[in-house]
Image 1 (cartoon, rainbow, N blue to C red):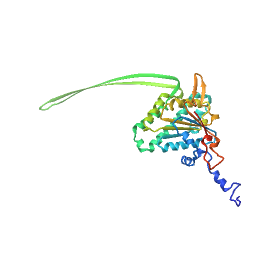
Image 2: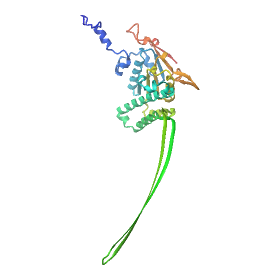
Image 3: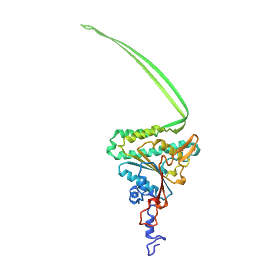
Image 4: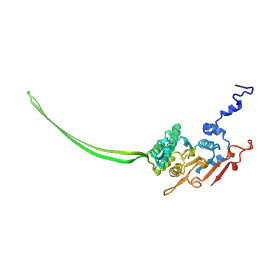
Length: 326
């Protein structure tokens, strides 16, 4: 049913057009996000090599800001990998309950996250003929993949060793002659000896397969990979931190601190909701996780004023939009 104003079912033409506009930044393409980004100063605050956590309630522009930073980083020649943590992991790692330890579940999340980084870097290499021809870079990527794919079996191990020897000898003798004006004779002999030896080693592991991570090996493989990137900095942008179960967040943060942040050519940015984030936790033997204010030096909080202003035509006041703590 349509009235004279062109509306249908109570919606005007303008409202129907507005309904087709995605309300969430993740529903837009990266180029659209960059074109529609209105910078009130938050881009400059984010565009530092320091590790940062970007706090803000839903709808305050965390995803938009991170995706804009991604496009800016790539524009100047560095490497940026944006990871939506809602797409990382598996039901076995996220929702399996008590069947797996929290450390094992967090380790699987880290492996999935770093595997995503590996795949993104490999895609960049494939698209660049110059990088594709660099065998050293390809080898470093392979080493990185190996460092995050180690497994172990928790359980019993059955080991058996066996050795077998086989000797064979073959002897032959032949005599031939010719009777004629000039008689002749020929004698031939043949001896063959064969010795065969085989060793067999067999291991049977019975138990559960677990992820095996060596922090030093992963950190070293990342450092070696970076040395083959011709001075390019790698920006790891982790969005939707709260999609990680709260019990696993401190462990995932601890893994990042041990494996990724020690590399001086890596920068990590995390988008999170402050009231729903759990970055640090006391466990038996100490405290694990990300220490906000030290390892991640700046805490950037996007407020509601980031999204709206009383004077639409005036630029946002960055001091009202953000609160930076060092």
